Image (cartoon, rainbow, N blue to C red; front, side, top):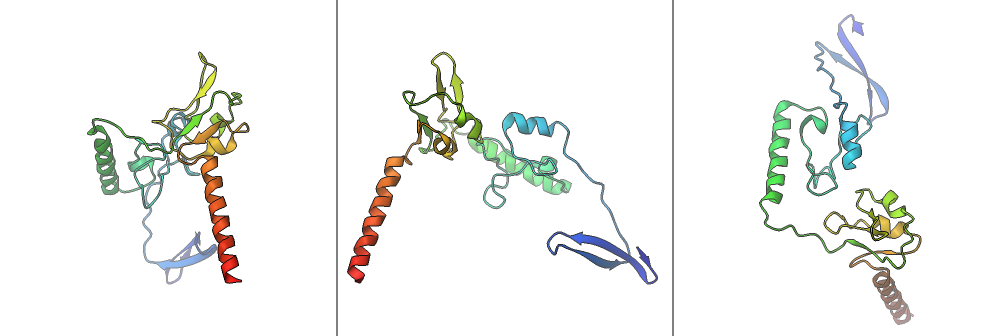
Length: 197
């Protein structure tokens, strides 16, 4: 709104949750940017997270700013959100360096915490396929079982916790291991309580 002594800009501050008036001499606006229309299809195909505006989201803002949650996929530039050319180039160089680090390896090593299906217990209810955020569980039509590729599994445990028949376990995080740890903690707490009384 034009005031007698200059320009006043009225904006809604998301942090304050209030409307704020700012007096200014000039107002410079940049052109708005939207994600490419194909980004929604790419997000669906690769199961990539996107924000409300449709821009892709990184795995972790501080720890993995160029990585998607799925390994081997990297993010940079305007696919991530509106930014200046210099920032897009810096992100592109970082993403290329991360990809080069993977491509330079002769062999890929996967983590030990991966899910494994017991075919004797599995009822092929497809719950694991619906709950896996990475789309790793697949139906093996020839054998009539669910397969989980250890190289693709991120070890999140969603499939194991959702499986109604308890046919899936995450290696190194099995139910028996957790029960033993909890029992040991309970026993230690009882010993401390007895010593205190």
